[in-house]
Length: 567
Image (cartoon, rainbow, N blue to C red; front, side):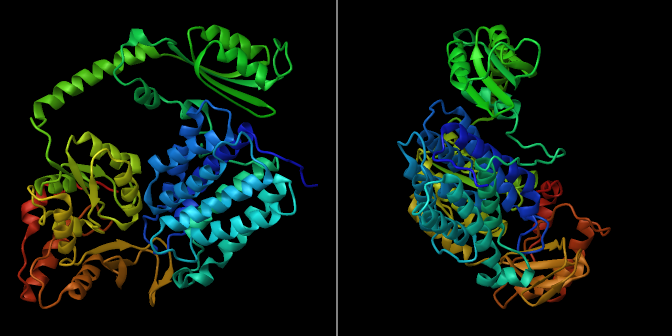
């Protein structure tokens, strides 16, 4: 029998988001496996999970009981934590959702449908060239079904059922709309991630249990994950420990109605109000069986005693934040002293922020003039907040961002809007493009002049990479078997082979033309028995035999690149 629900309160909304975050976290690897290319670095699921986890943390920090305020906090957290294009698009869906629910204490069926419609519209506007057969198709069809149902039924459960079912149906059509998906035999990974989010929402409103794997704990399912030591560090900063009004971070989990000291039937408002008078930073999340509490207080014993009046204590955690702050400040002072010894006396006029993985690449980009190298790349996209922090902490009057990966473009775009100083993006899609772009930078030029010159340099380089297939597949006319090597030229599969050396040789041959002069080779760990340097020297010999003018960048950077980290 269909449940009858007329409104979504702050408690239902918080449960919906927490459930979605847990469900995405559990299914992240499955979503990753839907990556179109059979490479071992599909990261859509990871990006969406980390992005929503950031949104949930912002929501948990919001003290208002208005759904509109919670939705705004969720959207802000998603924006600043957005990783990769999939994370940014998810943030835009909930940005539109939050704008539609602004000022609303509770949501009706019509409010919910309008919010999904606003989310779809905002997401489409955020993408320069919207492509059907992606997450955009899924959110549009889901929103359409929500509005159609809300027009004839004021039951929110019915609206959410229709929303999730339409998303599932739209997801199944993505291979018909995007040929590359049909070639590989998968649905769109971003669309699958959004469908999981809507499924979790639907399960909560239908009062269905969301089963989360016992071997894969959700990042935010427990209080100690939601409010961790790093959170306190970011909140406290460098304040005097003695100025902390409420010194004990107290967390409890109560099994409602269980135990020998139960004196009260559980009432959320009564339970919440008593704790609100004991301190600040209060967070109370409950369902029919469990209530979780986080509060900063001077009387942790009273918090524990109050919880026991409603049930037994399944979990207790008390941290002395004044002691934590003293430790943090001691470490910060030591770090500041170390940084002062190496820090430049004056901040640069223009900061160049670039993204790359590994100590070798960091050394290389620093040698080319980069101010900051953010650790990241194909397998771990930095968040919008990571890029914003790098810009703002540079101390420069203006900044240039080199993403070096097209999946970071949208997060970089968001960072440009949020940064404190004028910032432009040079749309480098690979490490080789990023290196070439750096050669066009002139310190005394304006941001716009440098952007133009550096973008022009991108057209002079061709990027290739060799990786291995993690599953059988058929892409772009190639029959690919698991563990085959693939040579990708500017992101497109160009060569498939059985050995690393042969694949690299064929890939480079396809990259060359009559104007080719310089080849730069960068390598990291390899699963092959053939040692990387041995393979590269053979490749160099082969290219020399083609009378190619070969610049041995290997010899120049081998000491740093040999330590290149795994992504």
